[in-house]
Amino acid sequence: MLEADRDTGPSIVWFRDDLRLADHPALHHAVTRGAPVIAVYVLDEQSPDIRPIGRASRWWLNSSLLSLTASLEALGVPLILRRGPAEEIITDLAASTNAAAVYWNRRYGLAERTVDAAIKTALRDAGRDAHSFAGTLLFEPWTISTGQGNPYSVFTPFWRACNAAALPRNPFPAPSSLDAWSGDLPTDTLADWQLEPRSHDWADGLRAAWQPGEAHAHARLHDFLTESLGTYAEQRDLPAEKVTSRLSPHLRWGEISPYQVWHATREATAGVTSPGATRFLTEIGWREFSYHVLFHAPQLATENWKTDFNAFPWQPLDTVALEAWQKGRTGFPLVDAGMRELWRTGTMHNRVRMVTASFLTKNLLIDWREGERWFWDTLVDADPASNPASWQWVAGSGADASPYFRVFNPQLQFAKFDPKEAYVRANIAEWGTDAYPEPIVDLGETRRAALAAYEYVKGARAPVGSASPTVTG
Image (cartoon, rainbow, N blue to C red; front, side, top):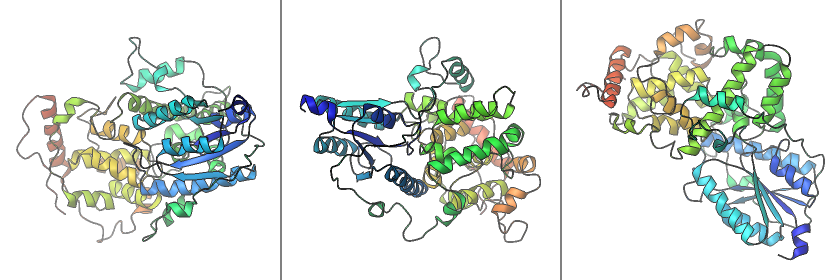
């Protein structure tokens, strides 16, 4: 690259899990640099160990990219879409446009970090500025450690350390204008990618439940802070009450940043004591903790975080029981309501997520990885850190995991958290009729089987011969 080109060449902004204009550090840096901007999104399902997103996530991505495209075009910049290995695409794009700089916001999975490191090296070797920024997490994983310099394995001291660290930076403003690169670049279209369902369009429920995009993310945050924050601490575990933020998919796809959420929440409760704000920001903390764990345990979606859990005597996969769980036909109303809500809307209330996960892993003794894969495919907020970390938490194999002896009783959870049956009735059309299925397992028997299996892992005694649950339907 010529010396003059290093100063005048365009800046490529590589969008990833940050589909927004405001508080986008990479974009902000490109604007500050002053050169023309090229915006690109790469659908990379080919680089080694990159995990392809699930069907619900593909639907959300399609809608979010449409929104981002419109926002960029309003500023005069097209969004270039490319599909394939990111290293090849980004380095070729930089060479063909004689770009002086390439900027992006960091990712934290090992496969993604490996790809990014290779791209950064290749770009710098070619004489280009390549720089990554913190835009996804408030506290990057290597910045928070124990007094011994180790990663945290328990949430409470981790979050205490985060709160004792420097306050998260203020969000960057959205650019009011952009200088577009004048060249002509080929681009895919979203129709080429066929991200939306084709044969059987089950996404009608997703469309009815969600409005992806940056503007809708901010509207959702505003509504939550003004309408629900005051009762959030008391009612957040009640699935029939509409008090949760519903921001998780917007955060997952980076339509809003945790910095924006953090500061907006603090500003909304300035000068007052707000249990709701404390509880809500603690949930943001759990997202941070999940990425902390993923960074230090990259195989979180496939391997037990606690290695002694490798001895857990999971039963041979019962496909009948698994399908009953997936379709919400277990005969346990809170479980079934949650699974049907998931299929219809691409989400599930957090309390119900814990109940359904406990039922699969402890009442059916089905490996947590089966549940993690189903959620990965059907959640619009399927997050590479939070999804496996949460599944391992419930199963007992993860960091700061739920105690092995904690088996959520779905009937007691139903009575406690949906006492008026409003959530169940909203999600199970045949509830209260003969058409609703009978329970497929006995809760007492399966709880004893689960405890026997956990005792085996602990080495306290050998597993009992009748450890597998009896599925009756």
